[in-house]
Image (cartoon, rainbow, N blue to C red):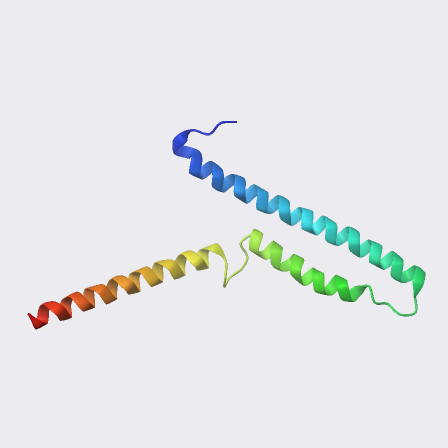
Length: 108
């Protein structure tokens, strides 16, 4: 499907978003399959010592963070946060320029 030139940027953003979501679900699928494998290996080789939950816990934290980022639930470092910070820095820079300009004109 060919996107119209004026919608190209919007199409690219949507495609990137779909790719990010697909990547997360791929990551989640591998996480589940590998951890089932670890569980089976653990129960077959040393059922008295359950170690499978350690890699499951560590990797699970990574999967959870990946999901939070992909679905924009990161309150501190999500896209909204980035946009707010960029806007804040740009506004601060403009204020500094105006302040400097006003100080220069006062000296003349």
